[in-house]
Figure 1: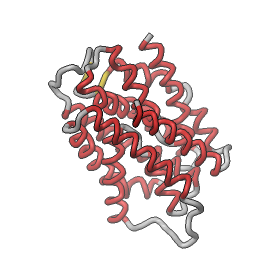
Figure 2 (figure 1 turned 90 degrees about the vertical axis):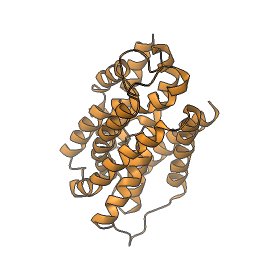
Figure 3 (figure 1 turned 30 degrees about the vertical axis):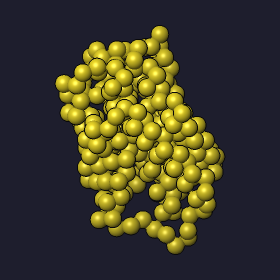
Figure 4 (figure 1 turned 90 degrees about the horizontal axis):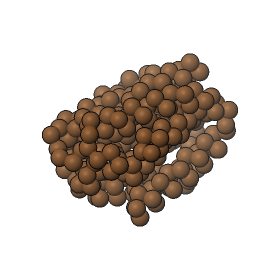
Length: 261
């Protein structure tokens, strides 16, 4: 039953990865907190395992989602390369910080972060006509913040990257596509960090690599492959306002669940 639910979760995540450029981590982490105990994961490391496994599941999705958006001309690779060094550094730092937090505290941090991001989307209004993307040094600093927060809470970074790029007057579809490419650096560096941080830890369940459940990663990844292209196609058909509303409602629902769960 747990594997069946993980497969269904993977199909949903594939659509979200293509549609919103978020890698599906906002859905994966709370779902994995519920499912991973069925794979033998103990309560003391449950949220760390959910975050690390979420990032592991995003690794392949982020590459496929970025490729789908690249084919439609939706990835600003100059911006991705400017953000990448900070994203990698932040991804490693986020995993290190998560290792020293209790499972419950980390879960609450995830919930608060998602609600704040949703609030920004709801109240942000229209981008200023004068605002532009900052230079390379500033983008590297922004990347460190995005990578660190994303790795800490187990998301592909789109929940932060998309609003930031849109705030800098990047069109919504291109912001989603660029965010998907940035998720590659976040996910892979975060996975490395969580694998090393959780190495030798107790209660990680069967077939784990540090704080990453390999059976869960495999089930989610395989089943998400089918639906990523569908989600990416939708991103170029839906209006920007509709994408923002979908994004905000999703984050509010999951954030509240993480706080009260």
